[in-house]
Length: 131
View 1 (cartoon, rainbow, N blue to C red):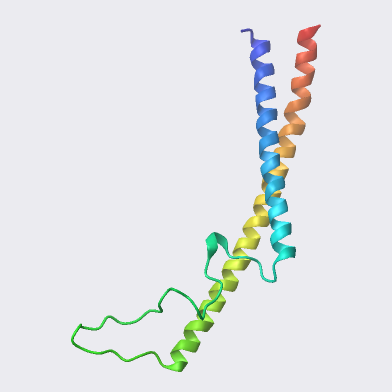
View 2 (view 1 turned 30 degrees about the horizontal axis):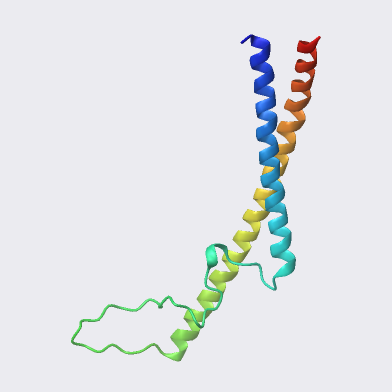
C-alpha cells in the first residue's frame, strides 16, 4: 500500500467514525427532548425510586443489640427523611438533565467538526489519486 492509499483510508475511516459520533449526539438530543416534553418531571436515571413515601430503601437507623427493642421513628424524623429524599431526587433530576444536554451538544459538535474537516480532505485525495 502506498502512502496516498493509507492517508485516504485514514481520512475515510475518521469520517465514518465521526458520523457514528454524530448519530450518538442526535440520539442524545432526541432523548433529551423526549424527556423534557413527555414527562411531568425529568425522569431519574437508572430507574431510580420516584416515590419517597413508598421507598424500598430504609432510612438510617442505629444498630440495636438483638435483646433490646429499639424505638420507632417519630413523625418528625419521617418528615425530615422524606424532605431529604425529595431534595435528593430533585438534585438527581437536575444533574441528569445537565448530563443529557452536555452529551447531546458534545457528541453532536465533535461529530460535525470531525466530519467537516476529514471528509472533504478524503474526497480531495481520492479524486487526486484517480487522476
